[in-house]
Image 1 (cartoon, rainbow, N blue to C red):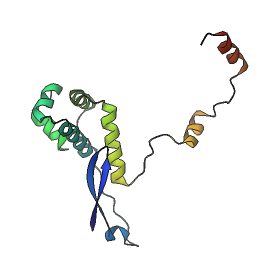
Image 2: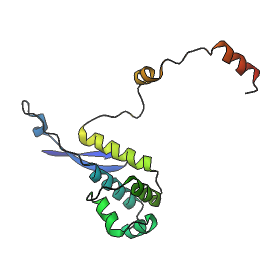
Image 3: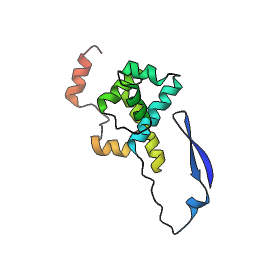
Image 4: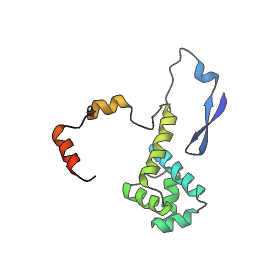
Length: 146
Protein backbone atom coordinates (compact mmCIF):
# COMPACT_ATOMS: atom_id res chain seq x y z
CA UNK A 1 0.00 0.00 0.00
CA UNK A 2 1.29 3.43 -0.98
CA UNK A 3 0.14 6.84 0.30
CA UNK A 4 -0.60 9.58 -2.22
CA UNK A 5 -1.11 13.27 -1.36
CA UNK A 6 -4.48 14.77 -2.22
CA UNK A 7 -4.84 18.55 -1.99
CA UNK A 8 -8.24 20.15 -1.35
CA UNK A 9 -8.30 23.95 -1.06
CA UNK A 10 -4.65 24.10 -0.08
CA UNK A 11 -4.88 21.39 2.59
CA UNK A 12 -2.94 18.21 1.84
CA UNK A 13 -4.37 14.87 2.97
CA UNK A 14 -2.83 11.44 2.38
CA UNK A 15 -4.84 8.72 0.65
CA UNK A 16 -3.95 5.04 0.45
CA UNK A 17 -3.43 3.79 -3.11
CA UNK A 18 -1.77 0.77 -4.55
CA UNK A 19 -2.17 -2.96 -4.99
CA UNK A 20 -5.10 -3.43 -2.63
CA UNK A 21 -7.23 -1.07 -4.74
CA UNK A 22 -6.38 -2.96 -7.94
CA UNK A 23 -7.44 -6.43 -6.75
CA UNK A 24 -10.08 -7.70 -9.22
CA UNK A 25 -13.08 -9.73 -8.15
CA UNK A 26 -13.28 -8.42 -4.62
CA UNK A 27 -16.15 -6.04 -3.96
CA UNK A 28 -14.95 -2.74 -2.59
CA UNK A 29 -16.22 -1.81 0.83
CA UNK A 30 -17.01 1.89 0.97
CA UNK A 31 -15.70 3.71 3.97
CA UNK A 32 -18.49 5.52 5.78
CA UNK A 33 -17.88 9.24 5.78
CA UNK A 34 -19.19 11.03 8.86
CA UNK A 35 -20.25 14.58 8.09
CA UNK A 36 -19.48 15.93 11.58
CA UNK A 37 -15.86 14.70 11.26
CA UNK A 38 -15.40 16.52 7.96
CA UNK A 39 -16.99 19.71 9.31
CA UNK A 40 -14.75 19.58 12.36
CA UNK A 41 -11.64 19.02 10.23
CA UNK A 42 -12.47 22.00 8.02
CA UNK A 43 -13.16 24.28 10.98
CA UNK A 44 -9.89 23.24 12.64
CA UNK A 45 -7.91 23.70 9.42
CA UNK A 46 -9.36 27.18 8.88
CA UNK A 47 -8.64 28.18 12.49
CA UNK A 48 -5.07 26.86 12.30
CA UNK A 49 -4.43 28.60 8.96
CA UNK A 50 -5.38 31.82 10.73
CA UNK A 51 -3.00 30.97 13.61
CA UNK A 52 -5.83 31.35 16.11
CA UNK A 53 -6.44 29.42 19.31
CA UNK A 54 -9.58 27.58 20.31
CA UNK A 55 -9.98 30.09 23.14
CA UNK A 56 -9.96 33.08 20.75
CA UNK A 57 -12.51 31.54 18.39
CA UNK A 58 -14.76 30.24 21.16
CA UNK A 59 -14.83 33.70 22.75
CA UNK A 60 -15.65 35.41 19.41
CA UNK A 61 -18.31 32.82 18.56
CA UNK A 62 -19.76 32.86 22.11
CA UNK A 63 -19.39 29.08 22.34
CA UNK A 64 -17.78 27.24 25.23
CA UNK A 65 -14.19 26.19 24.65
CA UNK A 66 -14.99 22.53 25.39
CA UNK A 67 -17.93 22.43 23.01
CA UNK A 68 -15.95 24.02 20.17
CA UNK A 69 -13.20 21.48 20.78
CA UNK A 70 -15.73 18.64 20.54
CA UNK A 71 -17.14 20.07 17.30
CA UNK A 72 -13.64 20.28 15.79
CA UNK A 73 -12.91 16.67 16.81
CA UNK A 74 -16.20 15.52 15.25
CA UNK A 75 -17.66 14.40 18.56
CA UNK A 76 -20.62 16.81 18.51
CA UNK A 77 -23.14 17.64 15.77
CA UNK A 78 -23.22 21.42 15.49
CA UNK A 79 -26.50 23.16 14.69
CA UNK A 80 -26.72 25.50 11.73
CA UNK A 81 -26.88 28.45 14.13
CA UNK A 82 -23.72 27.31 15.90
CA UNK A 83 -21.90 26.72 12.60
CA UNK A 84 -22.92 30.19 11.46
CA UNK A 85 -21.57 31.70 14.68
CA UNK A 86 -18.26 29.82 14.38
CA UNK A 87 -17.87 30.82 10.74
CA UNK A 88 -18.57 34.46 11.64
CA UNK A 89 -15.90 34.25 14.34
CA UNK A 90 -13.49 32.81 11.76
CA UNK A 91 -14.54 35.54 9.30
CA UNK A 92 -15.46 33.08 6.54
CA UNK A 93 -18.85 32.62 4.87
CA UNK A 94 -20.77 29.53 5.96
CA UNK A 95 -21.19 28.64 2.28
CA UNK A 96 -17.41 28.56 1.76
CA UNK A 97 -16.93 26.26 4.76
CA UNK A 98 -19.68 23.96 3.51
CA UNK A 99 -18.20 23.95 0.01
CA UNK A 100 -14.85 22.82 1.38
CA UNK A 101 -16.63 20.09 3.38
CA UNK A 102 -18.45 19.05 0.20
CA UNK A 103 -15.20 18.84 -1.77
CA UNK A 104 -13.60 16.69 0.94
CA UNK A 105 -16.62 14.40 0.98
CA UNK A 106 -16.40 14.04 -2.79
CA UNK A 107 -12.72 13.08 -2.53
CA UNK A 108 -13.48 10.56 0.22
CA UNK A 109 -16.28 9.04 -1.86
CA UNK A 110 -14.22 9.04 -5.05
CA UNK A 111 -16.67 11.32 -6.85
CA UNK A 112 -15.60 14.00 -9.29
CA UNK A 113 -17.64 17.16 -8.77
CA UNK A 114 -17.40 19.84 -11.49
CA UNK A 115 -16.94 23.46 -10.45
CA UNK A 116 -19.73 24.59 -12.77
CA UNK A 117 -23.02 23.23 -13.96
CA UNK A 118 -22.60 21.39 -17.28
CA UNK A 119 -24.47 22.96 -20.22
CA UNK A 120 -26.65 19.90 -20.79
CA UNK A 121 -28.00 20.25 -17.21
CA UNK A 122 -28.60 23.97 -17.51
CA UNK A 123 -30.47 23.44 -20.81
CA UNK A 124 -32.49 20.59 -19.35
CA UNK A 125 -33.61 22.48 -16.26
CA UNK A 126 -33.78 26.09 -17.48
CA UNK A 127 -34.66 25.62 -21.15
CA UNK A 128 -32.95 27.08 -24.18
CA UNK A 129 -32.19 30.77 -24.11
CA UNK A 130 -33.22 32.26 -27.46
CA UNK A 131 -30.53 33.87 -29.60
CA UNK A 132 -32.84 36.75 -30.51
CA UNK A 133 -34.79 38.95 -28.16
CA UNK A 134 -38.59 38.82 -28.72
CA UNK A 135 -39.99 41.77 -30.74
CA UNK A 136 -41.81 43.58 -27.91
CA UNK A 137 -38.80 43.31 -25.62
CA UNK A 138 -36.38 44.55 -28.29
CA UNK A 139 -38.60 47.65 -28.81
CA UNK A 140 -38.52 48.31 -25.05
CA UNK A 141 -34.74 47.93 -25.00
CA UNK A 142 -34.30 50.22 -28.02
CA UNK A 143 -36.39 52.98 -26.45
CA UNK A 144 -34.53 52.82 -23.13
CA UNK A 145 -31.27 54.71 -22.61
CA UNK A 146 -29.27 51.70 -21.45
